[in-house]
Image (cartoon, rainbow, N blue to C red):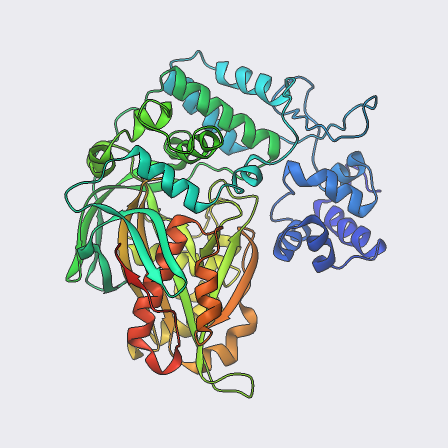
Length: 529
């Protein structure tokens, strides 16, 4: 194998050579590891290193030891006993030692540990010591990704538990819809004038603007501190991707079919990941013993989102969120099908921090700035960026991979060919982005802009259809025809849907039926109980 003095490019070449030597293509290796092929490609381009949890399986697939794999990946060992020297046991028999692998502590974890120290009133470095103990101690739980286990709890159980916890009033209700196959429920708190909006995104009605409102210094009580430490330990132990990036926090919003106007402030992902984002895990874990929790049963929820007033009062709490869109691409008539829209659906990967292994529309992303915190405030900026990242392979706009070094990553000269083609024709109505609905996700308190991306020009699919490829955030990408009424209805009733993904799918069906009736035979969707 290579040596530590081998260049980074040389080590990546050796990684490719080793894969070829054992007779595996990128696709075959990805299938064996149950990940997406693009993830393997990113390893081999040197864009990102394999997560901790996948390295033992990768070493086995390449028929090398973990030490040799670490050399190929240019992973330097860290001093024993520190958080940088993270151990993950690999079951090898009752009397055999577990395998230890090494990686440097990530910048995101550094930020998380500092944040916990400050918010919980701990001495500097104390959070690191506690996470080390949780990561490396005698944890009796099986070596299974927590998000894999939690994904076994379906949306219906989650929605029922939330309905038991909250009392709805004054016209506020979780989004519910009926199709031919039955009733579908979500945890998206909304009201009739927030649905079927058909608001063009990227035009004058996209009126979200940055506000200089300060964010109160976060504090953690004992329950919040312990939950944040456990989240940090899980991230480090299983190598889940977590970075500290800027997010937009919603302060207030007025939205209707006439337009939207709202104010945003800056927040950071670590604050969200170690507070509001923990509510889903707490609820899912509790459902196993108490499927109908009440106030007092969920300590974190009791603190962060105890009632409907707390959910709606976004000006006094951290309310992160984002946009997600059903993508519909016009295709010409062929011998296989009449003219239709191709609809894209993703299964979120194990490597994402939230929504893991859930079905969702694509693109989907947190609303936050890429470079310009003021100019990126409209929701259309996030949707365009997520299209480039999740559909067209622009790794340089993925803030989880690296910091941006370009003054304008979304400048026309840097756009992918498929996106540049669309932007050149923005005034010709060859494509559109629309907001189809809005609501607050009771699961996490997030704001959700359900959206629809429609490419109406058939030429786009003929030229660029082969370039669509989901990024590392997806395990796989599904495609459906807008004429497959029964298949799409069956899809909508799959239990694996994330609640916000299902919301966007159903609202997208309703709007697409209006704007493209000659291309669709979609399930009939009626919202309301």
